[in-house]
Every structure is written in structure tokens, then in C-alpha cells.
Image (cartoon, rainbow, N blue to C red; front, side, top):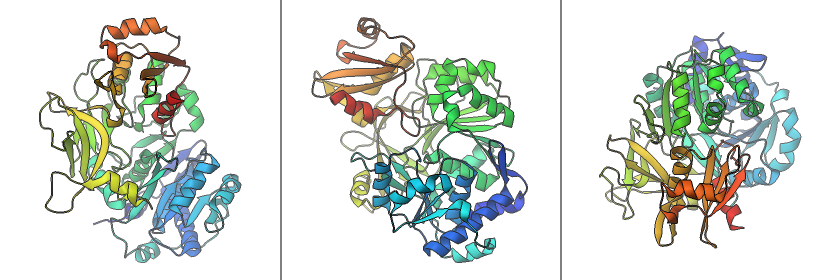
Length: 508
């Protein structure tokens, strides 16, 4: 029985020492080399910090050294916390003040950036200057023999309402549980090649590391700069025979709209997962049409649920104007759909808030008991013993096929002109049903009582054109009053539309 992810990596390395683990541009590293470098850096961490179960930050973009650093932190018996090198100093300083990591791993290029932010109490380790001896694998197994599977594996920072990100603590057990189902169900093996697009601060990167550690899959790093040139991403995938991707849909929508899948065949892509936001069905169907050999799956889960908790392998035809279901819960995960009175919704097509219980739950927010207590709460359906659930704030319903369907955010529900309106429904009509724009974000100006649409489109539409088209589908009280045409909507690090930004902007 394995209780720590590094145990998977040791077993995989010993099975496939000469296989390529990570490819980055013209560089690559084998599993044996990756293991040796990780153990060497881990020894430096141990000697420098003398700690276990502490956060160790990593401040580098996605590269071979980033993989070395995360594995080394795990080897050392600590939890990695990857930081975004594009974040402003103030935001990084807020994270350091809250999390108080024992050390930060960086390279020569970024050392000068992070040192003044980290301060005197945080050990800054330049990965390019590590010269420690390389202990045997058994050294770390013996050193960490007192660790358990509910010890923290990583900390992932997510946005917070106060401006300081919340550090979500995820443990080994929840990742191992997720691996147990997905590895077999989707037939992963050492022959898989991962097209790694997500930044290191996103939980998708953590799962890609799980595939590397647990199955011996290779990671192909897709440069950040390629996001502006999507055809280069597909060409890189074609060149390296990528067999698996796990992406946020935004870039996939752009590829579909640009007709790139017809230009660059991907015969080796056997599996495509997407998560993080709604994938417009019209653009999804373009992917499916052009990749008939590929299995597609829609995954759902906030960061507070390790990776994802609900999933839907798409096996039936889905019309362009039908939302893609999020499906069913994973094994060993239970869902509750609670109405406004905290009663479980059982009827079809009746919406409620999706709540989760099970191994997948995060341990809470690091050094933030107040916010932890607000989000991770006692199951209202069980008063007999302590049982924590996570309230996602997302509204869902079960359709007539028994599939869970995402409706929108609970906090995007508004009362306007006496009516209860879900802003996500307006977006769905504009983008998916009427196909008026490529992407859109509907927000509410509470002061002026105005529904506002920010949208991406090749050409600006007049307010009259919008109102005429939308008025044929939605009642008058749901039609936006204000329209803002933008060449591109602002997005978060993980690729999602930054709704908080537009919610604040509309109130200014």
C-alpha cells in the first residue's frame, strides 16, 4: 500500500530509468536523471530547512527544473506551493505573509525577483547552484516513514475576496484516490505523451505529475508563448505524438473557431479532458468531428475538491444548443444537491447547490481557519456525527437522462425587476444558442440596476441587434442593457474569464 506519491515515482523510475520523462524544447530528461536531480535537491532542502510537512515554494515557469523542484519537495517530506512568476510583487508578498513557506526554490533568472519578497526568514535555494550529495532512495523512505497519507502534498493558491489568495491544502490520499479511478478507467500507460499546456500554479499540472510518477507517462512542455499562436501548439503535439491533453476550454474554442483542426491532423491523440469552465457545445462538436478516434471527457471540480469530483465521458451526440453534462461523481465521492432550505434535491430538472463529501475534499485553507470554516461545513443532512462537506457555490440540476448539468454560479444569481435571474443563462443563450459572439461575460451593476455584457467578437454589434436577437429567446427583463465590445476578454492565470474583474469594473 502506497501512502506517499514519491513511492509511485520511485517504483516507476526503477521500471523505466531510460525513458524520457519531460521534454522542453530541445531539452529532455530521463526518469533516472530526473530522479537523481530531485534527490540531490531534496537533500539540499532537508539540510537547509530541517522540516517536514511545511510549505516549500517554487518560483519558476514550467520547465524541466520545475518538475525537478516539485518532486524534490515531495521527496523531502514537504508540500510544494508553485508560484506564478507573472504575479506582481504585492500579490506574491501577500502569499508569503499568509503561507510563510520554509524555503523557495528558484533559478538564477528569478532569484533576484523573489529574494526581496521572500525576506530574511525564508531560505532561497537556487536550483542551478545545488551541489549536495545524492542520497539513495531508501534514505528518503526511511526519513519519511512517519508520514501518513493525509499529510499535505501541495498547496494551490486561489483568488480571495480580500486580495490575498487562499492557499488550498491538498493531501496525498486525495490524489491517490483520483489516480486509482482514472488510471484504469482511461487506460493510461507508460506509452502516453502528455501535451502540457496549463501553468504550474494550476491543479492540472499536479495531475500531469501524477501521471508521470504513477504510470511513467512523458510530459511535453508547451511554451506559454504558443498561446498566441494556437497552430504552433497543434504542430508541437503532432511532432511529439501527444496522446493525452487536459485543458481549459478557452484555447480549444479558439482553435475550433480558427479551423485549425482541419489543418493539423492529430492521429495520436487518444484522450482529451477539459475542465475549469463551460465548453460551448458548437466548438466542442468541431473537435469531436475532426478527432473521431479521440475519447472526450468533461471534468468538473473547484480546487477545493482535489482535481475534479464529477465527470462525463461523452459517448452520445450532443446538439450545439445543449450544454455538455458534467455527468456523475467519481467512485468514493458523494454529491449533495441542496436547495435553499438545505434539503436534498431529488426531482429531475430542479436546481440546487452542488456540495461534495469524500476523500477528494481539501484539508482547508492554509493559515485561514475563518474561511475554512465558512466553506467546509457540517453536512446539514447528518446531525449524528461530524461529517464535513464542501459547498461549491455552483448550481446544478439532474436532467431527464440522470446526468448532472452545470447551471451557473450561485453568486451570479440576481434579483432584477423583481425576477430571480441566473446570469449564466443569459451567457448561454448569447454564446451557445444564438451564437452572437465568441465569448462573453454577463455581470450586474447593482447601483444602476443594469445587466451588462462584455463580449469578444470580430465585429461590434449594435445594442439594437443584440436586443432584437435576444428578445426572441429571453424575456425582456433578462436582456442586457449595456454592451462592451472587446478584442479579448481578460483571463485569470488558469485561462478562465476573470469574472471578478468585470464585476468590479461595472460598478466603477
